Image (tube, rainbow, N blue to C red):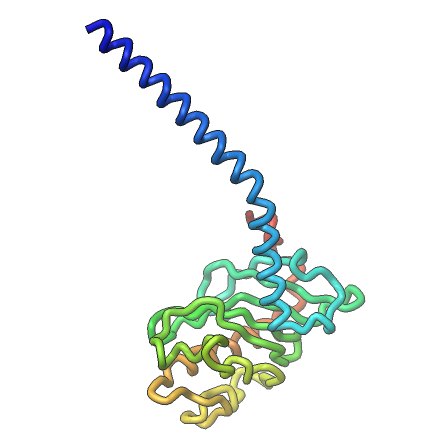
Length: 212
C-alpha cells in the first residue's frame, strides 16, 4: 500500500512538473510570436485601407488616427472604427467601417473610403454570408462589382442614382440576386452621407486606444 502511494505521488509530481513546463513553454512561444502576428495584422489592415483610400491622397499615419463611431447611419448602433486621412494636417477623407444590415443572408460588413463632400473613393466587403454563386459577387475575389463605387458621388439623401439599375439607379444587380447589391449600395450611400454631415464631430469622438 505504501509503495503504491509513493508511486502515485511520484507520478503526480512528474505530471505537475510537465504541466508547469508546458505552460511556461506556451507563454514563451506566445511572447515570441505576438509581435509578429500583430505586425502581420497591421500590414493586412494597411493593405485594405490603401484599397479604399489611395495613399497619395494623404500624408499622415492613418492607422494611428483611429476613432470609434456609434451612429445608426453606419447600419447599426454598434461601435465602428473610423480612420482619418489628413493632408498637411487638414482632414480630407476617412475610411469607415459600416454594416449593411439587410443582406440576403444577414449583415454585410464594409469598409468605405470617402471624402467629406460625398465622393466615394473606394469600398471593400470585409465579411459576409451571402449565397455562393449569387450574392457573393460582392467579394472582390469573385467579381469586380465592388470597385464600381470608386469615383461615384452622393449628392444628397434623395439622390436617385444610388440604387440598382432595376430600380432606376446606376449600379448593376446580380442575376437572381437583387437584395445583396441593393443592401450594399444603400449602406455605402449612408456612410458617405455620414461623413458629409459629421466632419466637424470626428475629432470629438473617442480614440480607438481609449475605447480599448
